Image (cartoon, rainbow, N blue to C red):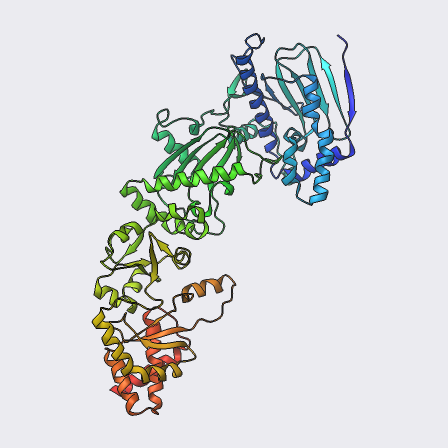
Length: 619
């Protein structure tokens, strides 16, 4: 047979693209081996399917595998498979894609759009060329299943490459890398070291379907597990195996609280094995935290901490998602933002939330204690799943200090005639329970949600109602708990206290927008409240901490007309309107109301001096 050899030149654009890949695309050079093993795995899949489809095809599928062979003396690493192989035409069309029109098209798009290479290069399927990151020369020998002639392709990744027809070659493809010298500064390792090659296989290719073998003395050793637990049902794997897998990927020593399996079939197929931990990690609320879901494509590891697949508020979820097909860029390190990713994310979120909703009470109690504050972030960030999140969130309340309650359970306990869901935010349960705002609600037996997480200040603004009932802060707006008789008495009191309220509004104008009588106080002399749509002091402080300046918000001072101090102040003001000491009393009353709700005084030394003088005068 006449040997047909062609020496072809890379076009200028192709040389530019190859240099771009070697120096700019991959942040981790180890990935070259993942790309080659992934190609081999695809070839093995294809030969098995083709043998099933064509019964006359002369091919042996009894021992399909990938071999890795190291020659330390020659400094070569060979990746070999007995898969489908390629014809000479396919080598030119597929491996030679880089030298064809796609290259110029890619570079043209990059110049036109000024997008990064990582966003565009994935369209052209050139992962094979990652080999040139670690090799001075690459030799590929391949024979297609059912054919007799083989093809040899070789290039140093610079000016030219050769394509040659050869007579003797086994079925499948072998890629031999003539390795560059080790260079630690450039993160280029010695890939003739057995341990290093095994490490890469076990990190990126441990779960692919086919055995990956390495020579061990005179025998071959399989170095990948091939055990993709996510591809097995709960009937095929024990909970102990799932628990061990969770510990392996999460580096947690405790068993997971819940195991979540999911399999999507149809036009877009993927499998997921997710875990809800039993305890929150130390960095759950750290800015540098990482999300725990790993992404695989056809059992080939793509990335850790895949942010595109799990929202921030479910960042504690660990596990694996394995897709049959995804649009990736050439480095497989960055996902293209397409509908497949969004579809997977939507389904995964719904699955996790439905799992939480169906948890046994004792498990849910653990879950909410550990992760409740994070889940509530979803009420602000994930409008699409707001209703599903509302179905799984719980809150402390005044109904039972030892138990949390769902919003639905709260609604079922509403008092006759109660139209709203009442809540109060604060730094601690003790501060809330001792707040003056609670007095009338406690006296009349109304349940109040006790909200002490920082996120509570934000989500209550994003969730105006539940099940037709408005959420109302008992520290904002007017409170209407009075009976008709009490309302009538209140009208008379407002007339009696009108002069005092007008005078105090003038005296405290720098700090408050209004002074009025309160229907929410039974024991305390005064409290400070906000208008219904005002930003709370805590939220105002949070915005300022994030660099967002807000105009100062004046609040409302409410007085308890039945308290001896307020009644005495009214009498004193009626008798001696010009007494300067009364202004100081009004100032002290406002300061006391601020402190009672856990607020901050503008001038603590002045408040302390005035208080000390008053105490001294009483002795």
